[in-house]
Image 1 (cartoon, rainbow, N blue to C red):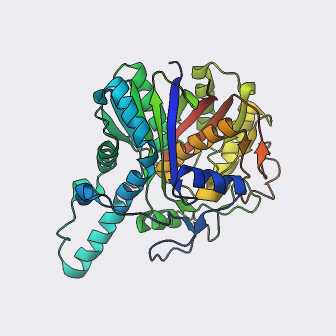
Image 2 (cartoon, rainbow, N blue to C red):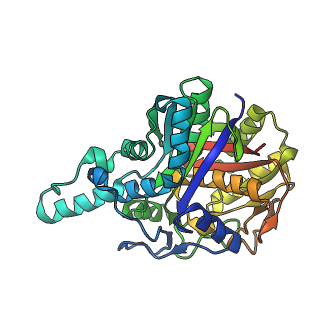
Length: 387
């Protein structure tokens, strides 16, 4: 499959409530991690979005934290999506969205009401508030896209794999454009789950650091408009996928599945490893993940490309992480710099990578983003500079 054009994109997360605010915080090296926006017994910091307005009255029945993040996140590419609908026809604009938590936060609230009173809230609707497909319907309402739409949910690789699905949809001639991305919202279930696995840190996560001790969870949305042809800000070149199924929650210690995904992306894109100038690593800040990923990257690239870890800014946004970090690669290609890897210094000795610990200028035509999930569901997304 040949490249497709990335003609517009949008970001919202703990760093800011629009794309330029997010990029500005990256450039300044300013973290968005802080206290959770709801009571929790888990002693950790999170990446929460500061302000989320309710949905418009016409969508009030869909209103949840997840839906608000999706609506707010896609707002910046609505105009571009409507242009694509006029160009290709609304039925030729598809949607593929990655998510992991979906509307669990809304269900937590409904369950708390049931536990207290024995009755479900009258306004709670499982299909509109909990179901993952609700996110697609909210984005469809915002953009007017009428093509095929579905959710990819493979935990932390969800929205990276959504790019693969979107590219396949275009090349299969099902659509001419796709709104692709990821959305996830914070909830207590997620925090308790990762704490139960002893993976959360009590401080801001420190990917690749010698004294790293766990992850920080975040929330956010990232969307891109892919088109068969157009004046792109960048190109989606190829996506490599693998599933090593080594362990339910731990990566293969030698990074075998991660390496397979990276090599598949390069092979499908017809790009030699030496041409990739920077890698946005999955780098969650856990001992096992970072060590395994470092082995995979070093095996393919050596210490040639700059490697950056950005979860110290946003937290690990689970289903939104992959798309967000793909777009961070687009920012690097557009603007010629990568941010500092917050918290990485002092770097663990012996990783064999060239990790950026300060904002660094780069000149390259290709960047790679890696995303690895529970169960060994891996993806590597290769993007290229625009024409």
